[in-house]
Length: 370
Image (cartoon, rainbow, N blue to C red):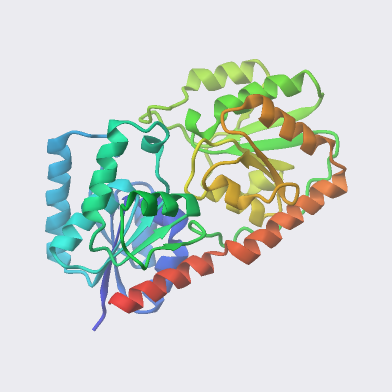
């Protein structure tokens, strides 16, 4: 008899972007897959893959007690109806609320902490409440996958989970066949940088802009691009007017949003992400897999993708001057050294960040509890 697995996250997009190969492998191994998430433009693609879909709308930022109580009831009803053999949760609310219900119904559970999130940038009452919810909800979870050692150490230090099965995995991993190593740009005069991220200040976009202002006074013919979607519901959202102003000043080119970023990475000499905090940034894994040097911040998640002076540079968080300095160090490299940095990036992801590692960890954990 086929076993049933629920995978629960905020959006369908999450599964198509970060778990597609895992879903394919689970379907191949004859599991019934039930996706629980909000509906978006990727939902039909998941259905065509062979996944069953159950819509549930999650307001990621809402702290309203009634709204969240209704969400918990909906989760309970869905789990009770499907009667899964295993549930896998990702992102904060599914991890917390889903785990409460799976524990109550005695369903074996695997969780993925995809990053501590903005609530942990400024430790306050909300952080305290989330910690209490984590401690309560994670008691009976079989396995928690963390995407970097800092997050696992935080959970261990705060005793948010006592599970000995907790592991660190390389984020969502990267599909090395899809993000193939690509030829480095030949142009040695117009050095092109790209920042691929959601348009929120927490990704370090303001520091990127301020660093560009410094560099524009020192160098000619530099190109700075930004690629990514707006996120107007985020407290840290960047407005369209901000983007238009920066473009009018000649600081950046806004390339819009692309589901497939490979072409944009191919046309770039270096990928920049001055983020404040990450789980494991997929944009950097994808860039590294395509043999591109990386400049990012010395913070959780980001620092795991860069070995200093080997495949890129680490800069200080929220420090435009240091970011500008690291970009200038890259600019001053010989062309062949830039190419070598990119090749080193590819070697690093081949060794540590293949999505096959992530898939193997999930399959191993699922086989133990299903």
